[in-house]
Image (cartoon, rainbow, N blue to C red; front, side, top):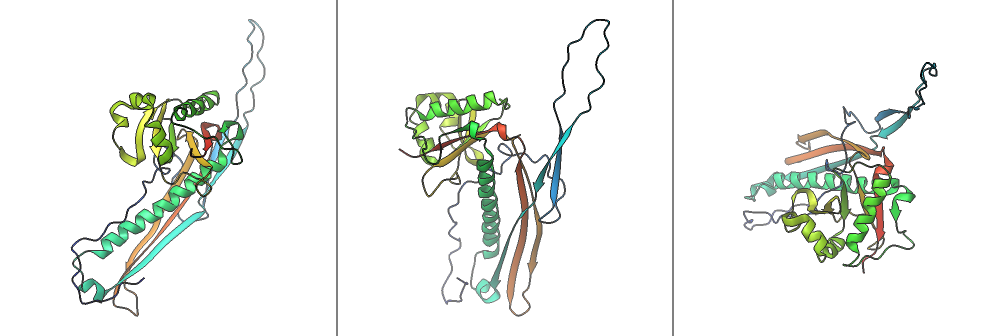
Length: 283
């Protein structure tokens, strides 16, 4: 609904919207190793790797085999997401206000773009977790309790151990109801010490079972069922983004100010075995 002129006094402060904490796009969850320079949606980043090197037995005074020809493989990260905002504030409306609507609108626009990216990353990671690294199914999800929630974190850690995922820097992203269960378990409280008793930056709510625990309302789910709690390490998922264009302009046929911006990004799971997932329902 457009802002409209009314002969009344505007409050000196805008009512700030309640916003979700954005978690999936942070450095602890994804890596920016291949970001480079992005010029437009549709560009690609080509990620090369080499195959395993064979090991042989050495026998004294015996020739070794000819040098092995290394094989390579290539993964492609596509910058295939492009989101924009474009808003206008009429000069008459601005004249009647003693608050900076443009500043608040810019802040809200930036948050909305990041929220879209956060949900995109959550879905990308969910779809890439190997079946062997998944506990529960959408048809038959696990049902944690305050007594077993911590045990599920241990099980996720075992899956990552068996996949040779890095130990330092592991994360798990949980919904609020699962975090509430953890708070009823002394093992979680004791493991996190002071870190479990306060809200940390970027959704961090504590540490336990070898994970930094992150809480998010963007955890993928099926209309309140079959929540996908993703655990892993940032080496698994590459993310690239850029605010490609940001313009403040004067619409030709109106008096006022407008701002538009374009955000492009993409992601690719390059080491899927460094991700694990619990599919769970509430009690």
